[in-house]
Length: 516
Image 1 (cartoon, helix red, strand yellow):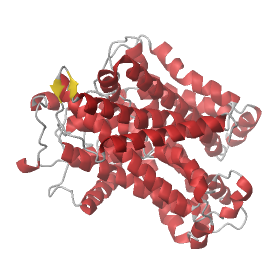
Image 2 (image 1 turned 30 degrees about the vertical axis):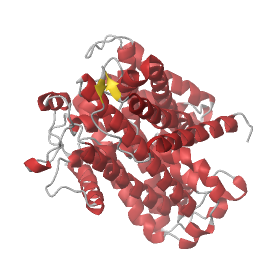
Image 3 (image 1 turned 120 degrees about the horizontal axis):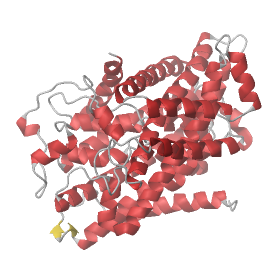
Image 4 (image 1 turned 180 degrees about the vertical axis):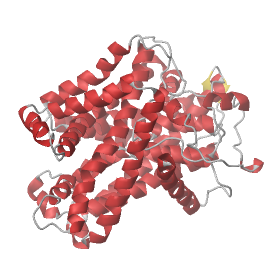
């Protein structure tokens, strides 16, 4: 029942987005088969194009989907050269559904990246940051459609449904391209695990500090050793993942998904009515809106599941386009509402003079202030709950992502647990070491992942793959392209995508070097 509650929220949201776009199917579709994860589902490696263990665990849920009977005319229409329908079905394990694919994209997008948005957008202002979110959404939509185009063409050429992004990049760009993609993939995962360990540990100390009997001891330990919170968070969740079975982890994850949905709904219900419109309009620093782009782009990542969507929908580019646009529009609307809720309850003058203020921390502090209204108290109490739940669900997915990647890299066979004692320390120890050196690295880690990792893996590489494939006029083995370009503008569009990515990367590098 908890899973059904969480899934129903996205069911309504995605149907609404499809209806607005005029592309919703006349009949109901398969429900959400994957919870809120952020950038949580791993990209299949070149050596193993199967869906990841994380995807499989979520897709195998009993009772997690809604039954439907779809009209024959609404079934996906594969392009010429698409592998046999039986192969596609076997690769994915569930019937094709535009709604299911849209919900998968929506659920994958919503994750812990939402936590960093208010910190970045407060000094920019609501209106400029909303424009930055819209621009980021367009950028990521184009990127997702380019990945879909290249993936479908490659699947048709190789007759191998289920190809992941890394396998596709190796096929189109060769080993060099695959190494760049793999490097960016690992970089993103480790950077975000650093961020989640830092903030998850801080949240854990804050929540445990309020418990009678143990609160004082927890806060004392955290005060003496700043790494205590991150270490406790990492070891607890890492132990659960390493020692727990799939069914137990599924139930834990589902409980946190429900907590994310409930706390987010509570924050909006309490926060939106108390928004001060003057706060939303008081700040408008348009030049600084560029600084918000890496976090906005990071928050809108879902591209790791686009290859899975392509297989689910059997290469039908019309339905894939609908899933990408409608599925990503739902989180966009949620992020804009969240941005308004937080920024409308925090005086922007707090960030005057370039000071970096965490609006969520400001809201959380109000719960303990004397004479706080019930609204302030409710917001302050819900903020750490929402923050921790969002981080936990994303943390699970990123650990699974690196686990799949490292098992492939080490040549471990599926189901072989003999090297887990080596793999899990390789996943958890490096982020913990970084956090021990810099406990306040949460925002910087997210910004770095968006600036360098996401723009490379989901900005430069999709443009390069589409350019290479279109210029060659074939997708491999001498076979012609199965689908035409799905994004208008030809090489101009691809050049703009690459240019935007390069500008963000160069600006980020110059900032790190202290040149700007």
